[in-house]
Amino acid sequence: RKILIVAIDYGEATIAILSSTGVHELMTIGHSIPGKSMEHSKRREYIAKFLNEVMSAVEKIYNREKVEALVIAGPGLAKKELERMLRSRYSTMKVVIEDATSSSISGVYEVLRRGIERKILGYFEAIEAQEVIEEVLRRLSKGDSRVAYGLDDVKMAAKIGAIESLVVSERLFRDPTKYAEIVELVDAIERSGGRVLIMGRNFELFQTLQSLGGIVAKLRFPIGHFFISKE
Image 1 (cartoon, one colour):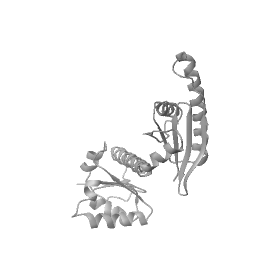
Image 2: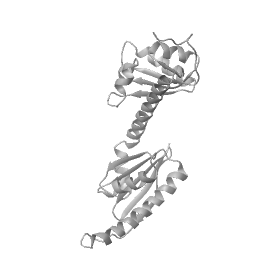
Image 3: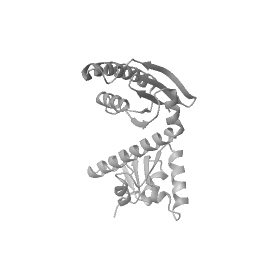
Image 4: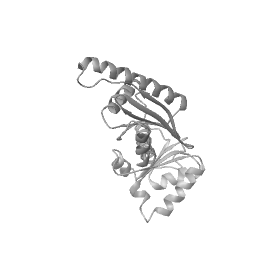
């Protein structure tokens, strides 16, 4: 997994990448931005030129390195401007905004000290979990039988390696009366190459997940009414 980190303020940007081999500073971009005493429209021209150069560099690295997410950090509003520019061109780009006191490499390390990697991965796993639930709901509405929900049906689907993605609620996962059963289920799904995601109670579809028994699965193939039947 690779995460691109940009520490930015008006006039300076430091671009680094976090990977399994550590943090690597890739480049620093510096522009002289006139002070606020300059006419606003002319000052904005300098800012736009700077931001466009940073965006161009980020685009190239993001595509070349196939990074999983982008973190934009900094002390002022430049980070928000860069985010808007990137989102207008890449609506699916995974971007996280963080505060930092510096636009130098120290700003990058400041963000990393807060555990940004765990935060990002947790956030995007939650988004992935919501997407799985949405797909399960879509399949149910269309009569597509490549779904399972409720602990008993999910266990039956797992027995034949049918589960592509599983979402289990944090509440069910932490239930002491179900814990051993859930752990055994998760191990079986992961052994068959399935994806397992845990959803916390603070996410939009948590109550929907609870209404489906606290556990849903997107299946690789339909397994028929012999295995899955709903009362």
